[in-house]
Every structure is written in structure tokens, then in C-alpha cells.
Image (cartoon, rainbow over all chains, first blue to last red):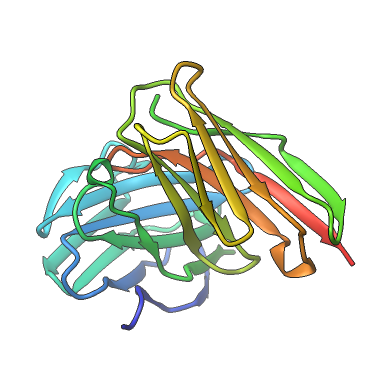
Length: 116
Length: 108
């Protein structure tokens, strides 16, 4: 089975530009999560979806961040306009069912984003 | 907070030694999960222990859970250089919320 696929793996862009990160979850998984990892703050949950519906976006830092899941096999995280403090590694994860029902999360290898 | 908190922050051992990492959490749980992150990669699920279990083994991994103390430990026996990674725990509630992890360095 293919794992969670994220693209691009690396992105370097100038501040003010729009950035779009992409994620393909594992087929059959009904939960999708977006995390951001930095040395200072560790791994932060940004938003998660259940059956393509956003459930909790309280971790999204600002209105500059938006996430969509148009179908069960694709999600995007968009930053517009980007700022240097958005530089981080962004992870997408998916799961089949809830963690409380003993389901693990499966992570992609992340997108390393650098905003100059 | 549902966050797991790992301790110590960093651990350095010689190959062949055992490594023990601890985790504390604050809420009641159905399970507790441990993950490993190699440099430049995503988190990988290692092992899940249910709230009615006290100990669980998987290969060289041994996990314990003490729900009265809201704590768990991960023991890696006979460590190898390939075990060098960061290790995270998360209490089994959706969504999983992670601490900053334990950075384990195994020196050959």
C-alpha cells in the first residue's frame, strides 16, 4: 500500500508569495490531519478533517492559512501571503477511524518550507 | 491538554545499551501511542497500548502504562545505531497531540 504522499518535498519561495502544499491520504482513510513542526514549538496540529469535512481548525495560525479537502483522496494547505515565520516542515497524516478506537495515524514525509 | 510530554528531552547511549523514555499525559485515555521520527522523515507508528493493558512487547520494544499515574514508558533493549531518532508519545484521542519528543542518539 502506498503511504501518505505529500508534495512538494521542498519549497523555497519569497515572502508574499502564495504557497500550496498537497497531500494524498491512504486510500480508505477517513481522517486527515495537517501538522507543522518547528524546533521552537514542536509538532503543532493545524487542522483536521473527517470524511472531507473540517472538524477543528483552531490550530490554523492566521487567516493567511487555509485548507481544503475537495475529495477523499486529496487535500491542500494554502498560505497566502507567506511570511518568513511560516518556515517549517508541514506534515499530513491520515487514519482509518479515531485514535480513541485504537487507530494509529500514518504520516507523510512532509514538505520543508522556507520563506525568504 | 491531551498532549503527551516526553522525558528526557535528549538521551545518548552506547550501542547495545537499553534506552528508556517516559511519557506523561493529563486526560483519561483509551490508549497511548508511541511514534518514531527519523531525521527528515515523518512520524512512524511504533506501538499502541490500550488503557486496560499494563505492558506490551513488540520485538525489542517494551511499553508500560500506568493509568493511575497517567504515565507510560518505552524501553528499547539492545539499542542499535539505527534506533537514533526522536520518539513521541500521544494519548489516544483524536486528534493526536504530540509533545516535543525525546531525541535518542545511539553511538556505535
